[in-house]
Image (cartoon, rainbow, N blue to C red; front, side):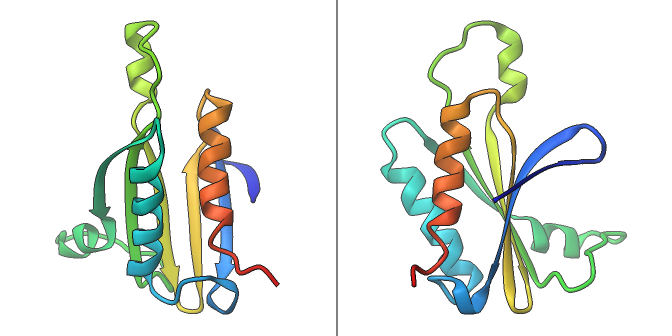
Length: 131
């Protein structure tokens, strides 16, 4: 996975997977993969699946980037504690899954909790077929 900064402030992780190298052929299958992993995780709690593409397409002035044919957010929480009220601004987490023709792009914002980053990275990397 690539670790980078977007919009000058936001550290994200991004994995681009060619469909030929992916364990799943469709966006729905990739979404189901993340949902199943979140539901099975002992700490993570699946909150929602949001069809960002449908939402944006339905807006009168919605804009979808070139080549994007699907976009879904899996919303989960890895919170183990609420040490201070301000930490709620950092939760829940969203894993973005975009479909672009012959590939999927998985992305998520870096969390202040390394364990959550590692879990989401593992989930994303599990999409890639092993040769």
